[in-house]
Length: 168
Image 1 (cartoon, helix red, strand yellow):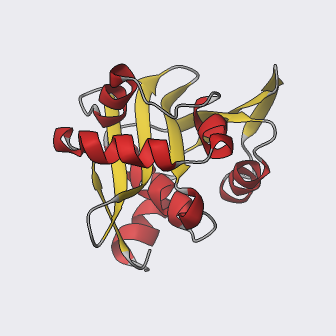
Image 2 (cartoon, rainbow, N blue to C red):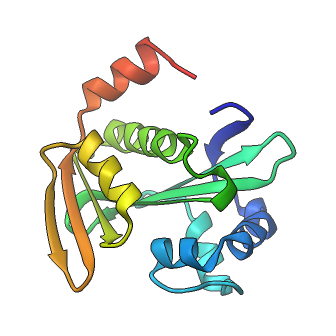
């Protein structure tokens, strides 16, 4: 994505992630966290930056180092890996979300994940369209206003698209 760099989250991103979260519109906060987070709690910030054997976290930064998107995955739940992505309002619609999903799932597939899951608010039409485009065979179960999505990770397709034929 032009003008941005995707990299693993780091502990020294704490202040940048706080500014990023506080800068999200209430609508975007709610679509990602199912509630507003205008003053992000320390525990939330720590969770978003955690990278270990069960969790992965990526950020997209501008040339000045400011975070404009965040993606995370964690092992377990309804699939091998569950993912969540949020993009700053002014950066939405530019392909940054799908790019983060690609990198996150490539990293997860290298560690053995074959299925991906996510909880999406029923009103989040943009993400539901993306899911249908990326995973036409995904299972979608509606529960209390959210859609539980489970899909297969096609590791070979990710490797073909990302390693053999890089695109930017």
